Amino acid sequence: MKIKAYLKPSCGWSNGVRAIMRKHNLAFEDIDIINNRANYEEMVRKSGQPLSPCVEIDGVMLADISGEEVENYMLANNLVQPTAAPVNVALNAGCSAEEHEKMAAKPVRFF
Image (cartoon, rainbow, N blue to C red; front, side):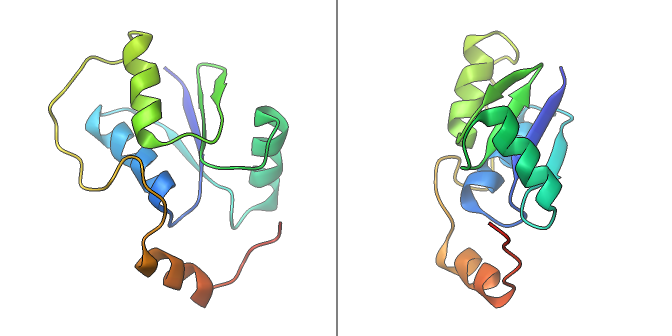
């Protein structure tokens, strides 16, 4: 399975996607859309919209999606099997106050 995840370096939604990849021991390309404009533009072009995270699995783009939704998609399509492996972050939540503070301290946004 080829997985490209268009993610922010520090974001609740993005961390939820990463947690699902770890939970299922999946190799994936973690693509930084904040510090690399070309990555962001690629995500927008492929997904047809500007919101993240976006996850492309074997050519299927899942736009503006949570970790929980990514896992549900993969389970429904028999790409992974159910597992009780623990995750260490919320799978369906935005950024925490701490994450927002980190991002505010380092404004790199270009969109």
